Image 1: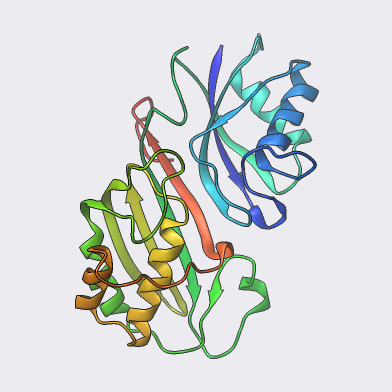
Image 2: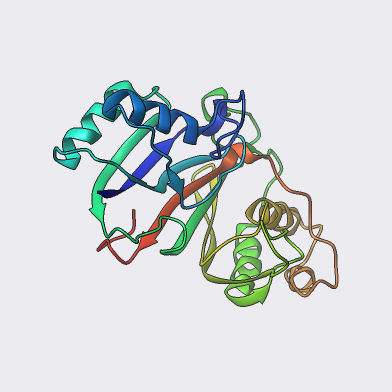
Length: 247
């Protein structure tokens, strides 16, 4: 039986999603929990390989198992043995040829910025602290130029091969009290693409780069800003055709 799990995790204490020798990773913890509950050695495949320190609310993961009970029983058992910084939010059967990675229709990332004069210790794990005032309207106008199919090589490198063309479906910047949220939904992302987009949008927000100049960065006529810290980044959702809603 092949199952799709929707996984939430706090990435602070992980060296990313993908398994690495002698390092704590999300994949390794999931496989350890599956072995403990089912007695099987199971390899899990994720929709994306989030980097060190990146969080997830809706990471998609598939795996095969001979588990003979209902998926909800396995979900409860896994959540009982997983460490407190990982949880299985949903678990459901999928076709035998389903792939959490290749069948993903889109992925949505959100970057959170705490924009106020005084830092917040309670927000420090999940938001980048920026004390300077930010022009969110300008940042949003710049971000919307990303929508569509473009060569995003200015903002990242491909995880494999040389193709840097991606399609962005949504990109917007909003403010909620002291928090600024940058949300981007795309068919796929380049390595560090979101973090460099955010770094460049911050230049727009601080007034050191205009909206028009941001378009020049996208066109690779101007250098992008630096990649921001990973701790403000969260994989919010992965959309699949086998589901009736974003998760």
